[in-house]
Length: 86
Image 1 (cartoon, helix red, strand yellow):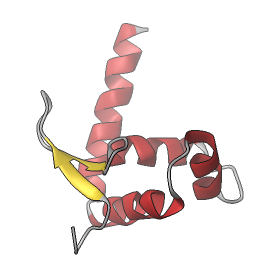
Image 2 (image 1 turned 45 degrees about the vertical axis):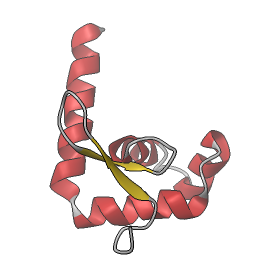
Image 3 (image 1 turned 60 degrees about the horizontal axis):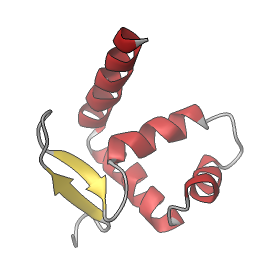
């Protein structure tokens, strides 16, 4: 927690993944921020739309920067799985 404030790790069917304390997984936050990238301040927009604390979102951004391959793999898996269902 000291190194990565607001980040916890969860086990699930796709393995261990990083998430926000009391909130969504980091990959979800990253994906939403990607979707909001056309906004001037996507972090503020995401915080306002979801009720997430800005410092939690910023922690997710820092985690993504430290482990980009992990987060991009989760986003890719999600997009692939949701396209297969559509």
